[in-house]
Image (cartoon, rainbow, N blue to C red; front, side, top):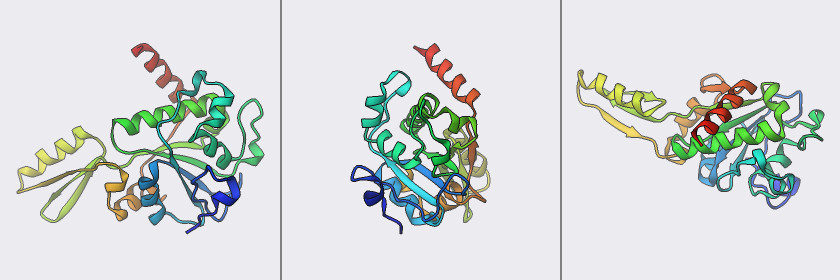
Length: 220
């Protein structure tokens, strides 16, 4: 397990780094909610090219936050250190340490909110990461339905309810609602969130973030 970040990036960082990085590499940085979730991901990641950074508390809304506050924030500071490019207008693309930034939040309302705030940060301070297609959302499973020894996973609460209703016609079912990444079995996290061949990932575009910000502004 690579735990070198305190020497490499300073005491404030809790990054579990990978062994290989660089702008042309396949290295990935998972940003997750808290130490427990990070530990779950670290157990199943490939330490050769997958790094994990836990958030410390909820991110700031950085659209109108000063550079000084962003740099001093307990999440954004270590995140900036790990990515290596610095912030606009002094962004240095040739110093990028990861080929992809993956936002892996808990499957609940707080996780969705944290993911939105992180996207606002990238939109405001590292827009070229989004423009180059290097930022993506990982969709963890919301829950599972077990029937006749088979497990079926859902990505939302309506989908979980629909699965349970469908399989009740064929016998007894067990419904399990996941309560954060730390509560999901390691093999499920590996297969649905971490392994490149089987995980569910949505790349974020500039238009996606702009639409999200406009929607939130309309709610206010």
